[in-house]
Length: 230
Image (cartoon, rainbow, N blue to C red; front, top):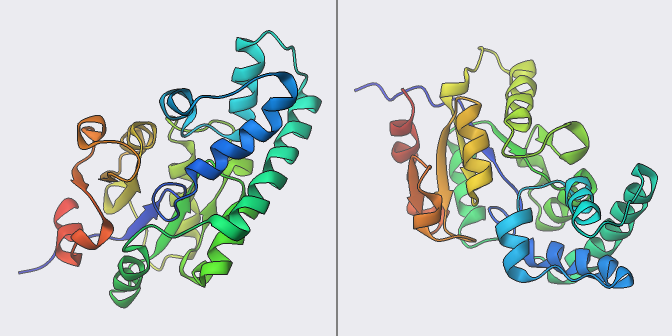
């Protein structure tokens, strides 16, 4: 029996490949403390997860009537990035089963990409430290899109870049997106892609838009992935 036509897997980064959302949260608060602002854990996961750094600071500026200019927001993003890098170098950890799952895809010849609201230097810092950088081509990061999740721009750009190197044209419905948040799932669905949610950050009930929900990536077989595609 011929397997369905799975052609690529696109990963979110924070919360899927690496356990770093808490580090982003801390890095934001290191910057925000100067302004007497603290992003609570609930607000961070309920309101800001999936946003780019620029979008987070824009939201904070509006909510707190701070009137930050684009130039000020750019400086705040740079400060937050520097703080995150310091934390990531010593504290970032891969999610359970990620390395084995990536190797399974590699062994089966499935191209892999990343589409994330994180910045490229942050992503590459962690991937290179884990010895995983060469598995992913392309990587779409926050600097490359105008609209973050739940907008589908990032996933569609990843597909475009995958097709630049593919021997055969990859269609959206031949792609599986792996996400840990509702915002990412909505974006992937809007891009016309299939979705798998990992309960690393939210409960299964909060991830119901997904086609399939697992507790860890090693719960998935290559046949599971093929069966999601038409």
